[in-house]
Amino acid sequence: MNNKSEFQFKIETKPDFAFLNVKIPSGKTLRVEASAMASMDSNIVMKTKLTGGFKRFLTGESLFINEFSAENGEGEINIAPGPPGDMEHIYLENTNVYLQSSAFVASSMNVTTDTKWQGFKRGFFSGNSFFLIKCSGVGDLWFNAYGGIIELDVDGDYVVDTGYIIGFTDGLTYDVKSVGGYKSLFFSGEGLVCRFQGKGKVWIQTKNISPFTSFLYIFRPVEKRSSTSD
Image 1 (cartoon, rainbow, N blue to C red):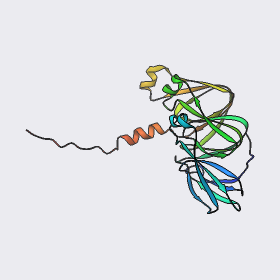
Image 2 (cartoon, rainbow, N blue to C red):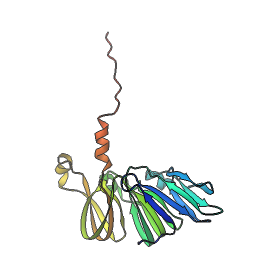
Image 3 (tube, one colour):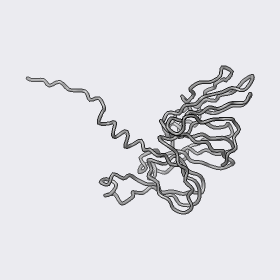
Image 4 (tube, helix red, strand yellow):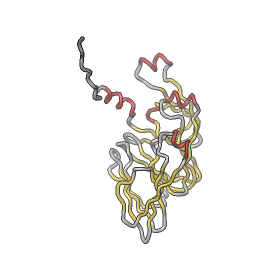
């Protein structure tokens, strides 16, 4: 992974509401997550393809992915991911990166995406998904986060709360544990953690969606029941 790229691109409005601008050379194609295209030149043609099948459905992602091709000259596309947060680009060179199920934004056509089963214990206790998205091959990969993105170099052991993990590279193994036993899990306010071992990179986000959704929950509309008397 380095600063190479098949495409000219710019990530605008970092880090709060990242917005990706990509110039697609004539005859080339960019793969983009469904519903992420915000605007594009009129010479760009979109094709929607079914991908991943039942395994992709289990990740919570759309079963469809869009491919954008520039015809008769270079075309420009703007991509807006769903979560309010940052976006990052890496260039894969026959390496594997594992992303949480909602993090994939776009990639070159030579980057393949597949689902990786975490195992029942890891998936159940992480509170996220039983599946990760495995990205491999050679080419560009863009992914997003809720909040900012911090890249960490791990050499040995490192612990990250499961709600803050965006992705990680090959060379790292992991297990999901409670940070201080199950008593601490229920009463300390701290969640489950992922203990990484080995050598590689981990990307974390600066916000956790779970506390935010819990905060919003108390403001949800509640239907009032009218009292009846006999």
